Image: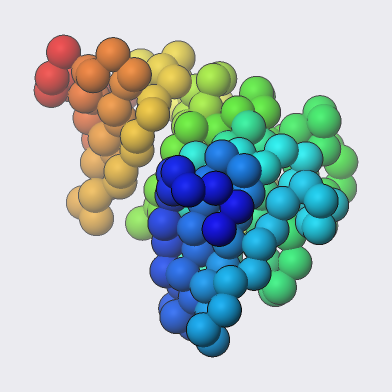
Length: 178
């Protein structure tokens, strides 16, 4: 492993176990480890991996000091201006700040991200801030944990330990724990 302090684990449908550390990422498959870091993977500008997750399309996401997508056997990274190198070109925007603290799948497809600038959703190769289409009291929050329930409730854990929940079809937010 790249480091003995494991920060994230995720198993993909093919049986691979992905292990995130502060010094790189390792994939355990077919009885052997493959290490990914800035020395052997150009898309990895930083080796830090805080969270791993998968969207409904089976793509692996890495959240850390940068945001990376592992799709079709290759890493896709954000540029310095946070635009994704994808089918819509350089105008496509990612989270407003490079650091991404956590991520969770969306029930309607895509994936939620939380970072320094708040909550963002990625769907159909496009990013939208939580407050871009709706005014949400969660928009200014920088959660360290996210979870969407199948009934359309988004839960957010703040760094101070407060827990919030929002019905996604509503602007109303409840503070569950403060």
